[in-house]
Image 1 (spheres, helix red, strand yellow):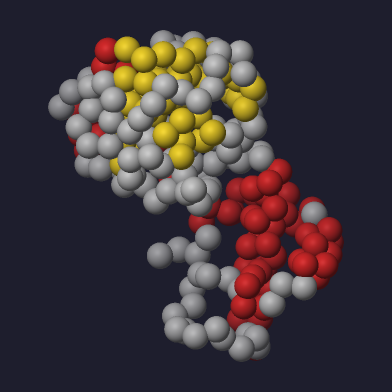
Image 2 (cartoon, rainbow, N blue to C red):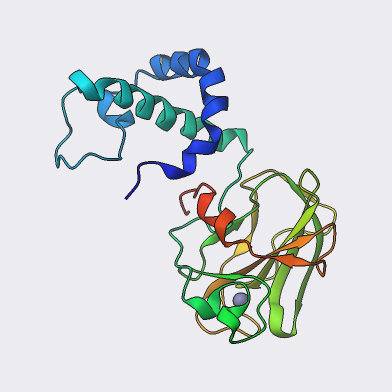
Length: 215
Ligand SMILES: [Zn+2]
């Protein structure tokens, strides 16, 4: 278990804003236990303030934790499209289907009804309810010039073509409509502003993106 891996990419930004974030933390008067770092600590009860060699790392953990709380409201992401703990399945669920089938995305298993969100600021290209895709949506990420496709959603997408979304904005709910075996999000990354553009393997990025709490 590695402590807070998803937060690493935003560290430079956090460091730039350290003074304001520290001020926010102080202004909130959060008890130390509320912002204590959850990682790399096996003590079962709230620990006393750390001292000695671990102190520096502890302060950084707290600042990253507090910073992350506010990153969420800043809606910049990138966030994992599934707002829950994700099971990425087996080889057959990966891009390329482990060589066993044609599969142009990554399957992401989580409980039915889990909120699905935009990873970053995007514009809705197209939505639909048809065939193997079930309820689906395609979001265009202008900054990276690529399209994120969501399939098998529980209900028709909660967004419409042309609508703009912030990172973390709701796209729909995880389900199992269309050609689907077990509730999951089928997630694709395709080149350009095109739900049918050249696909690429999203798994490495998905694992780096921050997971927002469900609900
Ligand atoms: Zn799939």
